[in-house]
Length: 131
Length: 131
Image (tube, rainbow over all chains, first blue to last red; front, side, top):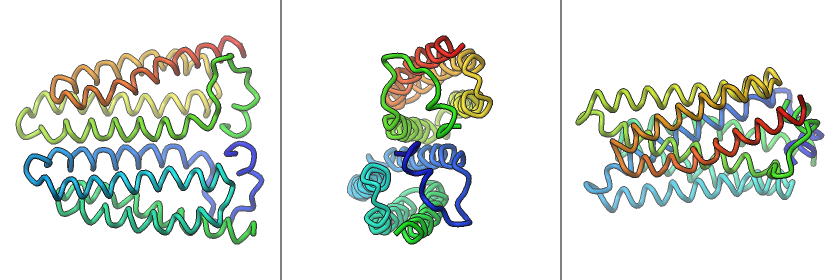
């Protein structure tokens, strides 16, 4: 669907070039991984708070995967657009939990939060333009 | 090029479906990020060895990005195929360094090493079939 259906959709004027997405997501995944690794390393010292933070991390990661399935798999930008709002909230909650445990982990989540904010606007626009 | 040039290439029989690549790379980037985060957290205790390991991590990451540029940007599977061998060696070296510092970090690199082994064969086959 990325190679067939997606190129046929009408995009808003601020839609970035397609090649941007792969390197941006690669960097974001590495940064969120490093953030999670730094948090994980504190598990012997603050077991409950770290477990809670990693649970939020797992939830946001599952929602992130689900978004791709809803958008590209089901080709349903409306459903994906509703789900991405929940995803954003879970990323924000993970950010709050991570920042409490390790300042750097918090910082590493900020680009992700900003990108998903942008992706939310983009998803909404694509739904609107192709409704 | 991912949406235009790549679909036109002849693929070997073992070429996986296209939708596999995004979730696989997402997981691999998160795992390598966690591995790097766990290693980074040891910097106060083993400064030199951690700095060396993270340098190898940065090199393999740059080579990973370069591979995408050579293959998809320059549309040069032969050059990409030569470069991916160097990438594989640098991932292996990072794996060795990481495993010395944190056993889990080593384990987290194994799926990455296996996938790039497979990608090397795939890259070589695509070059051969489209030479």
